[in-house]
Image (spheres, rainbow, N blue to C red):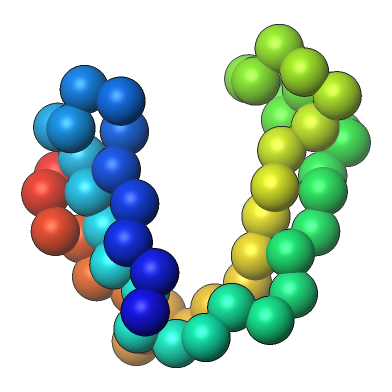
Length: 54
């Protein structure tokens, strides 16, 4: 299980499946949104994702 939240703790999520592959997206949208060279992305089934706080 994986959990995560934003820095202000207003949004939180839970992933119940194991994450096996993580990719780095280098498209212009991801670079612009992070201000870095890219962003980490993984693909999971929607049934394995749950919002804790939104």
